[in-house]
Length: 353
Ligand code: FES
Ligand SMILES: [Fe+2]
Image (tube, rainbow, N blue to C red; front, side):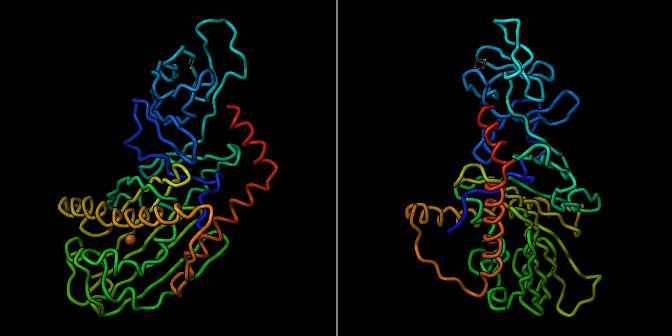
């Protein structure tokens, strides 16, 4: 069965940097409503989007410099979630606070830690250095998906689907036909396909300028619980290294609710970096191609959720080694958090916040 729960002690992308401003913003993440905004010095802030008094979404309130004033009866919270003012009384009890969340802003993304705050280590962010590399160009977007996050985790580790789901853009016959090599560790999976002397897919011709027969490389790398980097390369068949075009696609998958997901996709390329036309092609093409994945996951969600709590029989094929490994890793991480005593107390304090 595809898991619907994800581990909380991990970094997830909460928003793209340009989404977070001095306007209060609300976004559900892992079944929690989150209010996001920026302090006057530009640093992002996240706190639970419900007032401790009567559950009014704080995102419906207003900013008083860096502090957040509830729009219902005016309790005012500091950036750490501690209330500093209750309009009708002098005394502010210590329990008058809401949960705030550790954030890190890097690579044009705001990353959030939904688990135990003391475990939030910025050095544990998944490798996204391409986004901070000024010699590259990145185009990205956010796609809402009405399906559980794990469906996308598995979609991204079985790229044999390119042939059938994306035939007019990045798919070609060779992908489904050629074998895949799968490697894995405790918290990662990597699926590699080398495709030499194969037909160039139509979209590569548009953005890279290659055509005819090409040598194509494709590595799908998963870092648990829901971060993927797809390494893509292409060059004329038998061509030298100097003719290589290379891009990576970063897929940051953030569960919204149990069966809905925020899908952040970012294409970072090392070719034609100053070409605005290629930017536009990727903006449109990315939305189009990754939107086809979203459509497929939503269609599958419609089927499997109708069978719950049971589950229809599913047959696994050779290409499913990577996806199944990722499924087991997510299940194991969730189970480990469930049995950890510290996490149990953290969840209690969350529900009281
Ligand atoms: S609901 Fe926020 S102050 Fe009353
Ligand atoms: Fe796809």
